[in-house]
Image (tube, rainbow, N blue to C red):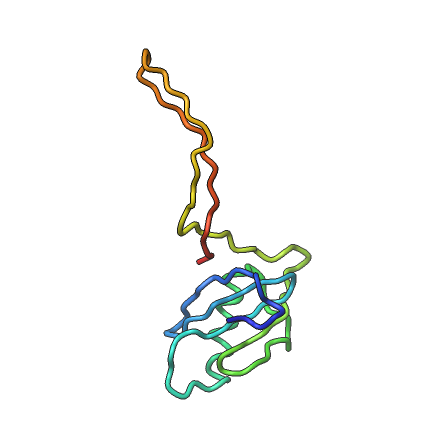
Length: 124
């Protein structure tokens, strides 16, 4: 679960050399949370992996000297060269739909329906 600053920000799951991170991008900030179990991971081993995951997801470089955190939560400031970082697109896992209107034409053997749907999903 992300800290309050990243509530509601969708995560993109990225695996780098056996370490799996949920990466969140908000403005020019990024956070990678390691979500897999690893025996005694050291921060100095996690930083390069988290940095690569953040750069792949955001499409930006990490600002020099901005990587910080521990072996589970790693934060970074993004250096995007004046452009905005990529924002992950939600992948729909489930739709909840309701038929709002039905039109039947027996002569043409047609049935048409108006449907309203809400998507529930997450980013990957």
